[in-house]
Length: 640
Picture (cartoon, rainbow, N blue to C red):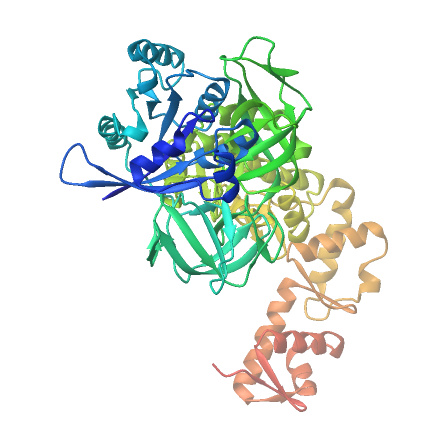
C-alpha cells in the first residue's frame, strides 16, 4: 500500500467539500462556523482508497480540503505545502474564477506539478464539452497544461468512477519518496481533548516519527516527547514521510506560535540536532507571467506576509540588484522577519501583501541562516546567484558554499536542507575526487583556498627568517596566533600546521622554522659572537659569569643567539655554559656516580673540576631531566 497526499483547490462554492465527501464518505467541514456559512474555513481532512491502475495494490490517500474563499488563502497555502497531486475543482456553471487563478498560481509557486481537474456541477451545463475546452485553455502555460478534465455531478454520483481512475493514474506516476532522515511536521491544527493532552496535526515530510521520540518544537526550541501517534485515525507506533498524522505531545500546552511551553499553529515539530530557527533567509523570488503587466509588483524594501508551511510571518524583502520584481520576473532576495522562522534550503513559500489580499510571488529558500550584514558583500551575492541556479544539485550547492566560505565544517553541513547526511557527504567526496576540495580533519576546504592559506602561513615564517636571521625560528605562540588569523575557525589551525610540515616547516623546541633555515649572526653582532664563543671555549667547565660575558646590547643579542641555537645553555641567571662544556660535565658526573653509587655536591665538585656556581644549577637540571636523583645531601643516578 502506497501513501499519498492529495489536496483540493478552487473557488468558493465550486463544490470541493461536497466532492470530497462523496469520494471519501467523510465531510471535511468540521467547524460549526463552516456548517453555518457553507464554506471551508480551516483545513479539512479525509481518507480515500484508490485502486492501483497497475493492479494488485491499493493507494491510501490523505485528502486535504483547503479553503476557497479569499479570506482564507493562508489556510490554503498550509494545505498545499506537501502535496503529491492536486484535485482542482471548477464549477461548470461558473467557469474559471479569480480565486481559481490565484490557487493555480500558488500551486505552481509551491511546486505542485501533478493534478486532475474535476469539473463539478456538470449536470447544470448543456454544452459540457465547451466548458472542458475552456478550462483546458486556461491551464495552458502552466505546469497543469494537458491534465485530465473530468466532468462530475457529485450529488448524483456521476463521473466519480472516472475521476477516481484519473486520480489513481496521476498518483501512480508519483516517484517513490526519498527520506532524508530529517522529519518535519508543520503544525496546521492544535487542540487539547479532555484526558488526552495536547495533540497537533500536519503532513509529515522528510523522515519518520515514532512513539517515545524526543522532539523539539520550532521556532521556540521547546523539547517534548511523542506520547502517541495516529495515522488516518488509527494508532500507530511509527509514521513515515508523506502521511497525515496526529501527534500527542507531552508536557506542552496549547498557545501561540513560537512561545516556550506551548505549541501553536505555524510551529514545526522536528528532531533535535536539525538546526535552529533564524530571523533571516536568502531566497529566489519569482512572479508568474499570468498577471497583467503592472498589476502586481514587489518593490525592494517592501513589507510582506510570508507563508511557509502553516506559518504566517511578516517580513521585509530586499532585492539583490533590482528595484522591483514584476510579472514574469525572477530575482535573488533576502527576507528579514519580525520573528524567527524554521526553514530548510529548498523549501518553497508564498509572499502576500500586508493586507493579505493578494499573492505577490513565490519563492525557494537558498540559505535558511542568512546574515543581514552580508547582504551587499560581493562574495555572498555571487554565492546567492550560484545557489539560485543549483537548487536541486547538492554537489553544486556545496561547491558554491565552499567558494564563498573557503572551509565548511562537515558536521552539520547543510543540516537544514532536504538532503540526507549521506547525500551531503557524498557531494563533498565528489568534489574531493575532482580536486575541487580537500578534507582537513572535520572540515571540507576548497583546494585553492587551502593552498593560499598554507602559502600565507609559510610566508609568515619565511618573513620572520628574513627579519630575524639570527633567530632559530618564529616563536611558536606567535606563530599559532598568526595561523589562527588565517582561518575562519581556530580548530582548522592544526590542519594548517600539518600541511606546513609536508612542505618543509618544522617545530624545533619552542620555535617554528623552515628546515633549510640556518641561523646566522647579522654583521653588527659577528664580533660579539666571536668574543663570547672564545670566552666560553677557554674555560669550558668553569666559564666566566654573565657580568664578564655581557658588556653591552650587542653582547646580549649575541648571547641570546648562542642560547637559541644551542651553542650555549643558561643554567640560571648566574651560570651560562657552552653546550660542549655542559656535555663534558654531564659525562663526568655520570661516570663518577656509576663508579661510586652516590656522591655529595662537594665530591662531585672535586670530580668534575668546576665550581658550585655551575655545579648546583647543573645538578638541579639533571634532576629535572631524570638523569639524577637527590636523596638528602647525596646524588645517585636514576635507575632504569
